[in-house]
Image 1: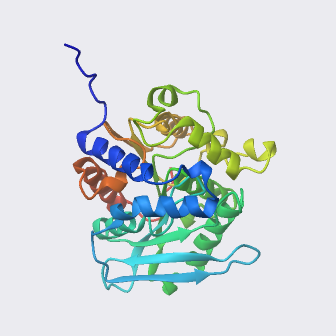
Image 2: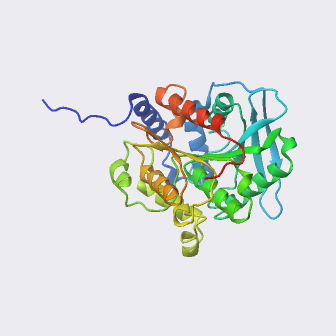
Amino acid sequence: MTLEPADDLDPDIRQFQRRLAAGYATHAALDRVPLAEARRIVEAVRAPLTQGGPVMAERRDIELAPDGLPALRLRVHRPDGAPTLPALVYLHGGGWVYFSLDTHDRLMREYAARSGRVVIGVAYAQAPEHRFPVALQQVLAVLRWLRAAPDALGADRARIALGGDSVGANLALAAAMVLRDAGEADALHGLLLNYGVYSDDDESESFRRFDGPLYTLGRDEMLGFWQGYLRNEADRQNPRAQPLRCDLSGLPPALLVVAECDVLRDSSLQLGAALRAYGNTPNLQRYAGATHSFLEAMSFAALSVRALDDSADWLRQLTPGATT
């Protein structure tokens, strides 16, 4: 009798991976259709994951037109009617190419309900139409606008955290470094970094171990994202594109959410080690059996719910003005 090899994914997360694979299998391959159609497919496959979840006291979209940059949309999720709340500005993943405020709507509502923060999602300009550093510049414009006019969204300017998943975590970390270098380190009091990508190194052990169709992100896919995001070799060497190449001192407290069965696992572990080398004390939360994007399985995966609760607890404990 031949025994099946043990599955390294949590059973609910394996179900999540299979649901995504089955959803994409009903459509043409993303690399064989025009980009607009590929984005439509991604939205359709992800749509069931956004259903249900907390109901907000307020949920609205607003437009922002930063000087010299493409206009963008923000989505505000307010969990209760308090006039002023601490804030979490959130940047969705998707390889700088895919996903949206809609694909991450439930995730942002969950953070709002669990942490008691007003969550502000940012629909930054996407690649390849808008390459580095446009999205980063937009994120910085949003943060500076929010600091200058916090009453517009009822956010406490002393308690603004910045978060994101995958490439959203990349943008969040890069934005924090730019603010630090501009003498605005007090603009943020925390960084929530979910299974982020912080360099283009794809020779790590996690890339070798978790590449392929049994998981939710692969080497070739990540390579394509980098190619679409960066303009040239100079961008590839820019620490604002690859934050692991930068001085990481003087940054706000950071929570690193690490999916153990993710090609990007080692990127987060390397970031944690680099932050510690610069005297920071990151909170590293590692989730065995989790793959990339696992937080999106919150409607049926206990592991995802636990990670959300852990992050919400950390956000509630943040104090204003802290840096490490």
